[in-house]
Image 1: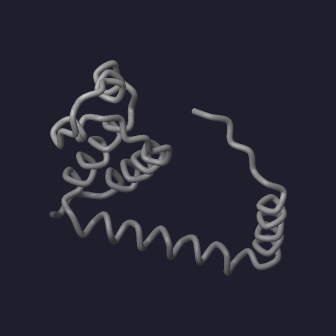
Image 2 (image 1 turned 45 degrees about the vertical axis):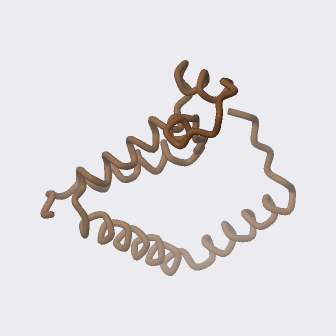
Length: 111
């Protein structure tokens, strides 16, 4: 993973957002709760096993392995079957999978 530097403009925006959240904490917390309820509703509207399996497959595709490194460096003709096996970088999938696992295992699988 490459180092990530936050520009000063973004830092100023974060400081402003945190200051606003401190000033009106109840509204901010109710907004966060509403977002969490929306995420739980979306997860519960599908089969949780299928959601977790799909995200896990995406994580596997974004994890460097000897095989996908070889496919990436191999100079072969454009082959759709090989394109599927190339490394597909995704820096956010691991965190997303963690959040979904926590939300999905907190309630029963009704679908």
